[in-house]
Amino acid sequence: MLLGLMKFLRACFRPRADQYGSTASDAGGRQDGLLWYKDTGQQFNGEFSMAVVQANNLLEDQSQLESGCLSLHDSGPYGTFVGIYDGHGGPETSRFINEHLFRHLKTFTAEHQSMSVEVIRKALQATEDGFFSFVSRQWSSNPQIAAVGSCCLVGVICNGTLYIANLGDSRAVLGRLVKSTGEVISIQLSSEHNASIESVRQELKSLHPDDSQIVVLKHNVWRVKGLIQISRSIGDVYLKKTEFNREPLYAKFRLREPFKRPILSSEPSISVHQLLPHDQFIIFASDGLWEHLTNQDAVNIVQNHPCSVRFSMF
Image 1 (cartoon, one colour):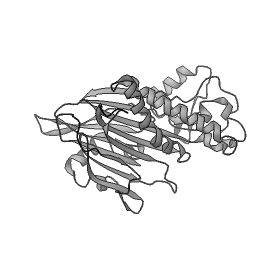
Image 2: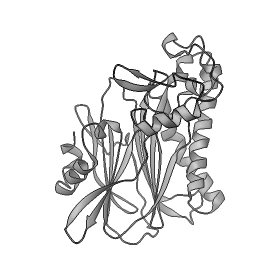
Image 3: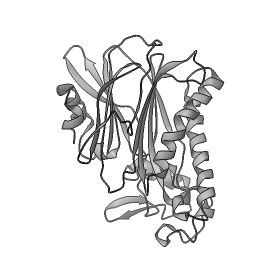
Image 4: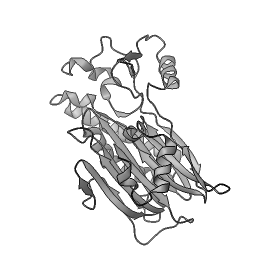
């Protein structure tokens, strides 16, 4: 389970002389048993805190925060980048995203000379393409790498605009103050890609009209091809390129028939939001949090326990 919390303290978005960056592997974090956390720190647009609860023996997830210049050129634009990478099947994909996605974002921002939906889309596609190349190089010695993937939730704040990009079932939720009542309400900013959602199942069926088994109810859980719950990801090459869905990949991952088109997609859902003065904070978290809390529950905890949120949520 990964959690990133950003709290806005400044109404203006401008370059700062000091720049802050953080990832889940930073030495500045602390550990309590299986919990990694980082106390409130500064980022370009305010404050942040981060936490990780390790659900498996092997930590497959990564989280990232970069703040300052979002381009290869020091002239800007300036802002904040947040990434939540919820890996599955192994840690390789989430680590790859952590090492490459922000670098691609800076490259394309420099090329376009601004931040945009297209810049984020290109950065995610370049990361996906890079991981495909990595799998191709590893295939002969480590074919199981083809079955490793990661959800990817990205937030970029630049010039007062918030961009949210998502692949998989992590979620970004905004806490917004209602001035007339003093209540802080939850607003979900991301679209999720999980076969448990009816619209996702319908999308898969429309994309694969000749495949009656594109989604299967297995042990009361809807899964794509009976294998995986998410319909979009980085990695999971075995369900995107048929040449990797064969021996010596483990039999449990191999499909009976070659597929004509990718079963999973790497196309992100991207939304754009203009930040308002009464927007208080954003929660970025993987599905491990949202399986236990509603959007409003999470917002209430952050609002009522601003100093202890990274502990009280788990």
